[in-house]
Image 1: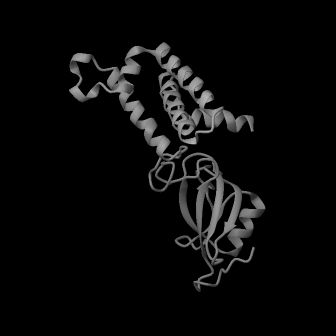
Image 2: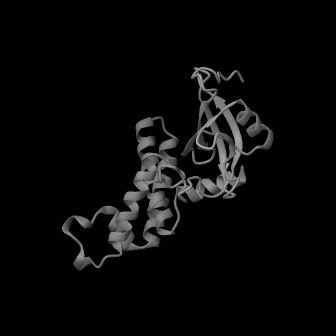
Image 3: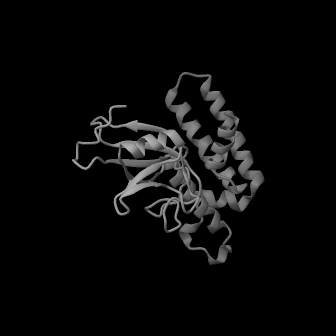
Length: 206
């Protein structure tokens, strides 16, 4: 790997630290050539501390090590993307990341949709007389009806998806697939789970 440690004149290159599983950016550090070599040798991410003016292995005091998975070099040969499996919080303030984000799987829009479904579940737990007029949504009505109704809807959508899969109308197939996934997310939430739990099971199987 041809890293240009001399590009900025200080012998250092930025090292962006990313969780190999969740893909969350955890922190930013700097490496010189010695820190890079030690990281590869030990499997524990080591930086060059500009404040301490020495090598610094993340976790050497806290025990919250960053276990190396891979290192990638950017197109200009002067920035590293370091994929890790973190052990414990990454930030010295005790948070998962240095931006105070939770280090959990993010499925983009589906994660946002899970949040909306969770809010509807909370509304369902509110007494009907205390709800606002616009609180009685379709999802709330499913949670009101209970787990049997929700499971039934997943079954119905699964059958409809299978039927459309046997035809050649891609638009109908995608729409039925979306309905199936939507109702499955509701079922997961009703059972107290989410996509991250399913992803974990699949990861363990893999």
